[in-house]
Length: 192
Ligand code: GRF
Image (tube, rainbow, N blue to C red; front, side, top):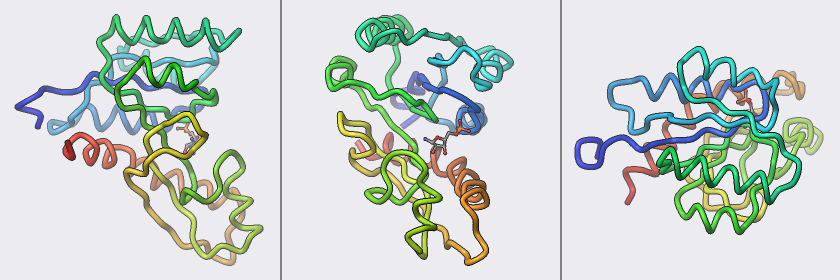
């Protein structure tokens, strides 16, 4: 794959901490990586992930979100200019419109901290515990116009222990997210 087509130019969209961004950068630096991260975009100027991108000399841009249309137009311009082939959403807190998804016309992935289709949206861990679920986990899926609803690429399941709190579960799931996202990218790019 890599030899035939070269690494895919990847943009990562973040809003905060950026621990998944870190794991994607780490993966992108491995010899067999199928991606090259060319752009990190945040709608939050204080996102920690922006600093991390800077440290790694990756083009990092804050875009102020005043309205969806101008935000997305700016995104499309940057994506085109940087010849981006794939977008990875990693803790990005804005919802992309159907029109943006259509215009970009290439894969957009997202990572979500639940076993989709269960627990779309926010506060997934507390909801799973309140509902006495036996398992939780993480999902990487294709982004479509409905929240957390596109085709699932890969999932990883973990057991919820009786002793788990929302916080402890969040920690455990985040850890598996970091391994899952690169694997899902490989799955996507080798399944054409
Ligand atoms: C992760 O739990 C991810 O699944 C969700 O938002 C969180 C982002 O964390 N979409 P980080 O910014 O990557 O550390």
